[in-house]
Amino acid sequence: MRRDVRGRVVLVTGASRGIGRRVAERLAKLGAILALTARSVDDLTTLADALKATGARVEVFAGDLTKSEDRTRIVSQTVECFGRLDVLMNCAGVCSFGEFSSSSEEVVRKVLEVNFFAPVEMIRVAAPHLTRSFETARDGWRPAIVNLASICGRWGIPSMSEHCASKHAFVGLTESLRGEFERFGIDVLLVLPGLVRSDDLQKHLLRNEGKIHLNFEGAQPSDEVADSVVRSLLNNRVERAVGFASWWVWFGKRMFPRGVRFFMQRKVWKYARREKRAGVV
Ligand SMILES: NC(=O)c1ccc[n+]([C@@H]2O[C@H](COP(=O)([O-])OP(=O)(O)OC[C@H]3O[C@@H](n4cnc5c(N)ncnc54)[C@H](OP(=O)(O)O)[C@@H]3O)[C@@H](O)[C@H]2O)c1
Image (tube, rainbow, N blue to C red; front, side, top):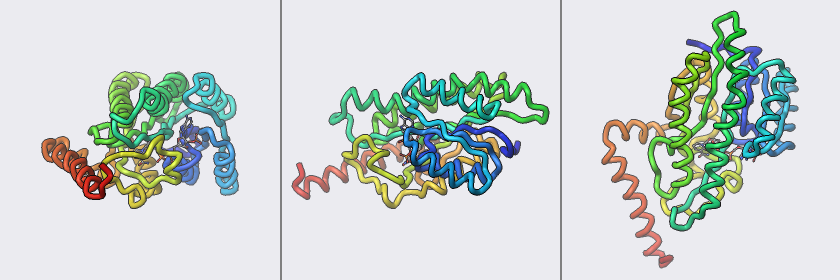
């Protein structure tokens, strides 16, 4: 199946920067009508103005997705403004890089709020509108929910326990909803990036004290990830691991899980040895 997004109303969360922003830019080029959301109004407005200058139809509905009233408002403003909602792209998220032993209940809850409860409740609010999009379609159109999770949702990476917990929960929910929403004509798609270069690592990471080596600067550009996210929507790809690192873990988990486990543990030991040599511990 090939999905044509021309003239379709797409709500993109996390559109102020990073992958969400790039996804919005690509969808605008494809002729989608865009509702953009995140908390940073100025960044959203700058993006919307740039896209409008190219002829795209774009509106900004800013809000904090961890707040119930904001989620409801963002979806109803989208529907009031454009008359319907055809696609929900769940791109917003945060990450916490650090060991469980140095974490806190506050961090775990914050990560779960943004990465799990917020998109889950966005889906709940958007689902009736997406169902209507299917019921009123005359041309075989199928609405979609695209959930941008992470390879952390398929394998527990050391020093990312809260993040992995949130993404595993999100992946599980996505798989359940795929079955449930089939009867409403809604496709539920999953994208699993590996390590992605952030526009602003300070904002992306709630904490940055992990004890394995991850090269955030040399990671995959968010432009490449956004290309894959949009391709997943257009080609109705149920699950896609994006980038070599993600694909390697995804494939390794199926084919040689002990090898992947060994590799992860080795990364932890290597880091500990380096710290010891440097006299940190
Ligand atoms: N970067 C990576 O290495 C990586 C790897 C795998 C998966 N992913 C996933 O991909 C998604 C996007 O990541 P990214 O790298 O693009 O991150 P990013 O550059 O930090 O962007 C995150 C977006 O989420 C929004 N956001 C965060 N908290 C929010 C809240 N409470 N309410 C509303 N919006 C909120 C941010 O906007 P405001 O701050 O303006 O609200 C921003 O637009 C996330 O789900 C992430 O887990 C990222």
